[in-house]
Length: 135
Image (cartoon, rainbow, N blue to C red; front, side):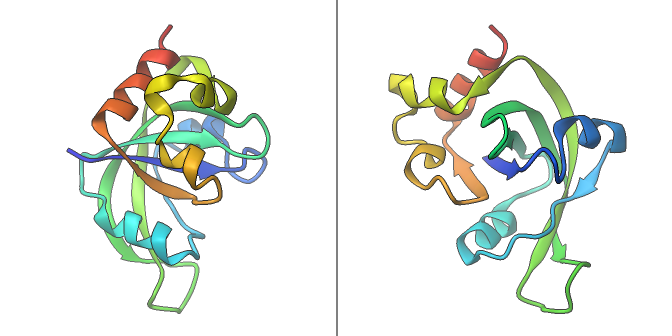
């Protein structure tokens, strides 16, 4: 099992809309490092959903339901998507501020590489953020 975090601006695609849709392909990634992280995702992997810009908080957990394939929004073969489905909404969103304050999360990519839209997480980081979200 691998763990990741994906970011979305809530006015473009919110957690609430994701839950209404029930499943979506994760498109629009145009950064090679983020693309490689999408390619590393395997069916069943768990993914934290982060609202960027507005809110700046992790709001829930999704899972990978289909591994990478050509991004249908572009003809450029370099870009891929994965299909995600929502799993759980956090009782309490975990803010970026709370993540930065937590000693166990100092090395998380969200803190170190703030602009990266798809990032891997260590199991300990994933578990800690989930624990904070269920307080």
